[in-house]
Image (tube, rainbow, N blue to C red; front, side):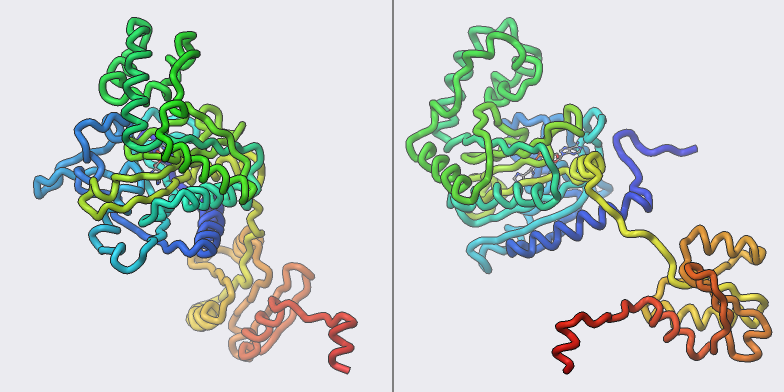
Length: 434
Ligand code: HAM
């Protein structure tokens, strides 16, 4: 038997309904903030993701699925949504149409990681990007939308963490301070951090194993290295979050796993339900990503959530109530002539908005009744030769357990009326009529 590739999963029919619910909610909330959906390819030229030789992030260095296509071009399955969206933003000159472009996306991403609960090799992100402004107020708006999504989904026990990585000068100064600090403990650093100290010392702050060591307790904090402007900018973001009423925690250890961030970075965590993969979503401001991809000097901010993680948490807290599934009408034709008529009837009923089923496997009468029950059919129609000769159909109401014969011409109206909620007048409605 063939099996799924490691780190992937099938979304089976019962599960897909949860996805659709969540996606519908996301489409609605994004329209409130005037974001448009964008769909970019799941693979791009490798250079879209492998932009800088000195990029030290694991996502780009260790986890991408890279391949050479038959035209000998180097391609990469997208490990995240932002770079492809920015490529499209530039290629389609969206910056010429709007002074702020708001885009969101939902779709698969690929990272060669060690799979575990909430961590897959193919996973899906919902993300959004606001491109074309450096206003700190926009950062606050994006964080508040992130928070509002989680609150509207009623996910409890979450925490928003924010930090500022400052501008380039702030980060250069901070980097220097980190290097000189960690050089004092070089023999105690893990092998990954020995590389990080050369390439991107900020990423040392993210190391799960070194962070547990006591030499970490006096590590310099970015806040002390922010330039006056960067500090002011961060204060404005926080003041706006306060004004909106968003609860957050400033975490100077938050550096994020991708290299394009500057100034505000943030994550939203859940306290339980996902084990160690407790980050539901994260993002931040980027100052040079658009120009690195050969676009104009525009800044932006965005965030992405793991769809699987959102669904896992929502399942954990039983937040998704799916409506009962049912079939309006199960049609059971008996005999060849009836089958022909059934095809015509089913087409008319379905086009009229009724969910219908029938039997194409010549099952016994009893097996068909069982099948109709299994499908939670509200009405069963039996079309035998007698009924057909009289232009009638026998209707069994599965709820009342009653049965009657009606004219075939009246079938659509009969069913439609049964499924149209009846208006029961209240006293104010009666008064209006009077
Ligand atoms: P990221 O933090 O790498 O950021 O990923 C965002 C979210 O995707 C994570 O918080 C997590 O929920 C989910 N995720 C990441 N990797 C996996 C995985 N292997 N399995 C399941 N879920 C996963 C970004 O991707 C940035 N593009 C976010 C962003 C948008 N920054 C600015 N704009």
